Structure formats: structure tokens, C-alpha cells
Image (spheres, rainbow over the protein chains, first blue to last red):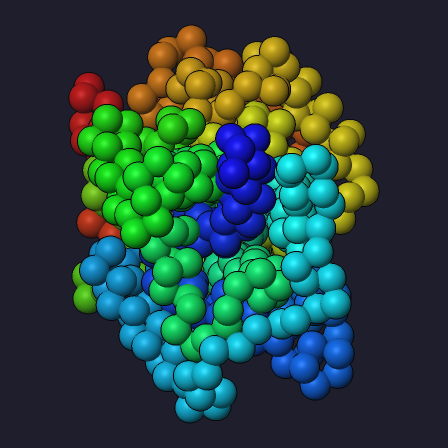
Length: 296
Length: 237
């Protein structure tokens, strides 16, 4: 394969991974919760697309809104019932609780759907655009385009709408947010719901290219973590840059060093970044302004 | 005596098991400029937080226009026209000054928001060139202007300001006091917590002295300024 093809592959992978990391980054940056159950939301999104395809023949790309809606509701419910107790809690508490959720959701999925590996075989699977020796699969291109559209929409929501502004304000200063009349609990439920919905969308897109199992989630959680560290926390552009970077590292790492080492390469880079630029590549951590609530 | 806009009855409040306020009662009438003075730890900030929904009182009542608001969240107070400008400004540092101000109007509809923004900028002209800069980059005085401006964007009838002058340069304090006095002259009811007793009493139509969580003196500002107990305890004369 040529280098140009590798670059195309890296972009296709990176764009999708940006969406994988986006919700994780949002929840971490705004609520200070490292959500280890993020990958299970991706898994649930993938199963949503799978069942809609196999039961009713719905194209996975059209299942995205359904997956997002279902995961939004699940996320908001989980926030109010469980996550609310660990917002801004010590990091160990957030890790324990979300890790517990991860195990719970994975096992429910195993019980419901067994460990069978499933896949969505659309009529355009395996086909794509051919440019000379280069090829761009339709499903991967579609996933990239939709991932970028959803990422752009989230950015617009956070930057340009009143509600988005209120979410960011909540992250910066809870006391200030309450003083202007923002309901903090509602903002957290909304944020966690959006984080889950983004994971659901990513899962539906992943269903078009990858195998679906109840255990698929954790590898995406780890990648989302690495992307957040690479790109910096909580910002949409950070997730995008981190995701693309991760795509390049994974694709070219496999080419130059060997397919068995892709995880090792990614984590080597991760450790190097943590040592040299702990604030991430963009160097503008969203949570820089986050303050503890308190004071009279 | 006109009907109280804000009425506090036997309010007891604090943090966890620690009671800070003991049976505090006070009234704020429309058009008042109320100063709450007292030494550090007397419970001034706790009082403001407890009458704006930022802190739940453990006993007693807070009435706004006669409605019992004792257990209402801060957003309900904001909706009813009582806005709290918290101690330490509590701006959103990574957002622009304009975004900070617009968030002040969070509980309102879109109507009149732009006009109110213009009015806030007329009240605090130093914010005009800073409008698109980050709030975290403002000087202390400008931050306080932004915080009060953000409060005004909620179209309050009562504005509570916690520590107007704390940590600010004298020039900035003068500008802020002048602005607050003009807001009061235009009809806004103001309650201010202030550690500079002299400054607070000079401006206040009504003043309360808090000591160890209890109201120990009340009267008009000028009256208290000449009270020998105040002069000895707070003014050092």
C-alpha cells in the first residue's frame, strides 16, 4: 500500500475516533468525571444500529438519531441516579463507580445478546471509491463525514446557543452559574446525556466497519482517554486534533513497526506526551478555569 | 412603612453542623440601600447566600414579595427578581466578557437582552473595549464591574452584592460605588455586604451590624456612623 493510502486510512480512522472521544472529553472537562463506561455507550449504539438493521433493515447511518436519542435518555437517567453522586468527587471515586457501571452494562449486554460476534452487512459494504490504486470505502467515508458533521454541530451548540453557554459556564464556576440562575443538576444531566448520545452516534458509525460484541467498549474507552490526553481536555477542537493524531499514530505505527504493536505505540506516545506536554498538544485545557464549589 | 420587598424572619443558617447565623431578622423595602457590616466571620456572606437560595437555611423564613422562598433554589430567586453577585466575583474566566454578561440574562427570554447589554456598558464604560476579551484577563475592578453587570442582566429588583470593594484599588472602588449609587438613584434596591464600614455606612439608607451571627445594631447609615459603639469597634476612633 502506498503512503497516500495510509494517509487516507489515518484520516478515515482519526475522524471517527474524534467522535469516539468527543463525549468522553465533554463529560471529563465539564463534570470532572472520567467515564470508564463511555465504551459501553458506544457498544449500545452499535447494537442499536445492528438490531435496527437486522430486524427492520434500517441502514446504520439512518439509525444514528435513534441511537443518539436512546443513549441520551440512558445517559441522563444514569446521571441523575448514579453519576450525580460523584460529580467533582475525588478521581478514585469516579473511576470506581464508572468502572462498576462498565461491568454492569457489559454483563447485561452479554446476558441479553450473548457473546456472539455480530456485524452489519450493508449492500455497499466492501465497495468504495477507487482512484487509481487508492480506495476509499463508502462506509468509512460516510462515517468520517458524519463524525465531522456531528462534531461541528456540538461545537456550534456549545459556542453559539444559550444552553451550550450555560453548560460551559457550569464547568468554569458553579457558584457563578447558580448565581445567574442556572440549574447545575440539569446541566450535568444534559452534559452526560449528550456525552452518551455522542457515544451512541459513534457506535452506530462503528457498526458499519467493525465487529460488534458486548465487550467491544473498553478498547474505545482507552482510545478516548488517550485522545483526550493528546488533544487536551474538554474542547471540541482538542478531540478532533487528538483523534486525527491518534489515527495517524495507529495507522503508521502498524505499517512501520508491525500490526501487533499498535497499542504499544499509542501508549508510548501517550506517555511521552504526558511527560513533555501534560496540558495536551493544544495546550489549552478546558478545565483550566474549573474551580471547586464552596465559599459563603 | 411600605410592604417589605425582602423579609427575613428568625433565620438560622450555616454549613453542615456549624450554625453561623442565629435568628437573624431584617427587612428590605423597595428603594432601600441596605448595608450589612460586621467583622470577618460575623456571617455577612452566609446571610446573603441564605437569602438568595445559594445556601439552604436550617430554620426561619425568607420572604420575597410575601412569597415564602426559604427552600427555593437560587434560580427561583433570580426569576423573581433577586440577584446575588457572589463574593470573589465568580465570573466564567474562559468565556468572553460579552458571554458572561449574556449569561446574566439566562433566566429571561430574549426580549430586551441587547438593550440591557447596552445599558450595562453605559453603566460600566471600561467594559466596552474588553467585551470580546476573556473575563479571566480583566483587572479586579473590571471583574467586579462585569460581575455586577452580569447581575443587572437578570433585570433584578433587588441586587445583593457580596464584598463590593474587597481587594480592589481605591480608584476602582470609587468608580464602582458611583455606579452602584446611580443604580440606586434609578430605583434599584440594593443590599451590600461590605468590610469597609465607613464606606458602607456613608451610602446606606439602612444598615445592619452583624456580630457572631446576630444582628446587634440597626439604623440608618449616617445614624450608625455617629454611634459610639460603631466608632469604637469598626472605625477605630
